Image (cartoon, rainbow, N blue to C red; front, side):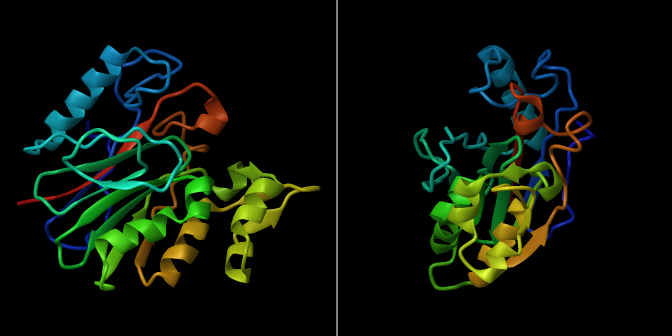
Length: 241
């Protein structure tokens, strides 16, 4: 448990943030460690046991609000029924918001007045469809000051993409700068910088973790692109009472 990440990001004294890693022996290979994803082929009882351990560790009144992530733009309020969504927000104390990733971006949001938080799962499809803007709209409808932390994800050097991704995301010069040509009809894509471009436009204060899932998959993270069948780690945010 002491190998989990507690980011040096403090948008408000009430905000708490945690990123799990694979550093615990709950699941065997190929999940190999602390897998929290139910859609990975791992035994559900192992995944649920890991989720229970995580909740016990953070010791919140309410359990984390787990989503069924579908690479869409739906953002739901924590505490409701289980839902297919890729973002969850909360304004209540001790109600953790959580997303699972293994190369996609986990983006954690907090209002600077300490009244609302959110967790968003953003792959290239989510970025192209505007999930970050959707989360900002829900958290700060009157343009209240908002901060975001972009967590561990696949880095540009490890993420080669084709025309479908480039055409969906490189619509302006700032976004185009997040791609490096890598042969005919291929580019290296910087997802984290693309998120920052979008969040800067939305007026959000952005902090990048600069952590790569693909290059640190043996020690800390899961990487779907590098490993194929593998687990998922969690990025959580909640408000203390």
